[in-house]
Image 1: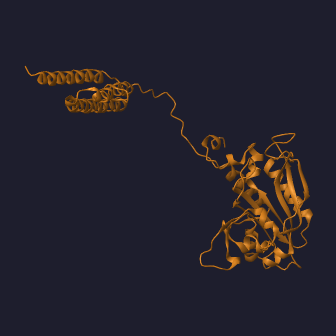
Image 2 (image 1 turned 180 degrees about the vertical axis):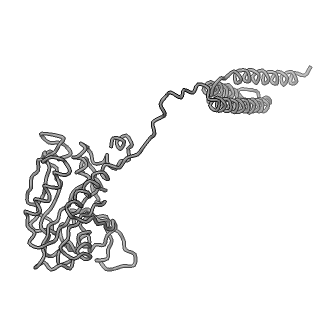
Image 3 (image 1 turned 90 degrees about the horizontal axis):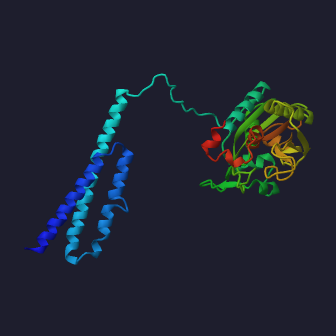
Length: 356
């Protein structure tokens, strides 16, 4: 009797036996979870087929080819059985759903998921409504701005040290060698002031909400992308008193109460005199990372429009005067909703945004 024939016959019988055992277990699976367990038992990284393939190297050289073929045949056969059973389970599940078995019409329907406006958008719209009620117009301007509008026309020439504090993203204007035509990602919404003066006849009142960009080192109160709202009033005999009255109305309308604020001198090239309006930090009493341990948050720079800015916008500064302010919308949202890190606003985390 040929011993090789006996060996081949034994392997075939063993293959058939393992296939029959696998079929029994697969057919007994009542759901996809049980089927996954059986599949893992046979075809997983530590399953029966993987063990058989790993042991081929221990066999005599003349038996390795047949052993490898048998293992692959078993693998293919089991995979086909698993796929067939998965189709049956899917069809059975679909048929059960279609039949309506187990459906209880008295149960409440699944809650519909709905979106909401971003907190910055919510506050922006409230501010727009507030200023519209005060006789202001809402304007917009480009986010990629000419150097002339972002700096030069705002009394910030090329050699002015104030440019250093803006940490500007500069863009290359293709084909242009004129410095005035250099493009920048706008560092504030103030360029809209100049465009407004060029297009509107005084007297006028305008606001311009929008996105700004600075090459900042991010922390709890600074980000490279943020939102501001610029405001400007041009008329006859405009004074600091008009400015203070408008700012008090603004803050009362937003916070629905008189907020603890302070007005202190500040320097900005496009206003004279200039002021800083600060709000008391709502997150601490003795100082924290948001207020940089000062207990105050810088909220609103403002002042009377510099005559050079009026002249750059084509307005006679001997006849007309005005005031301007730049409101930090991102920081206002932090105050309004108790957000202790500005990076949460634009991090894209739905767990945060779903709270609004």
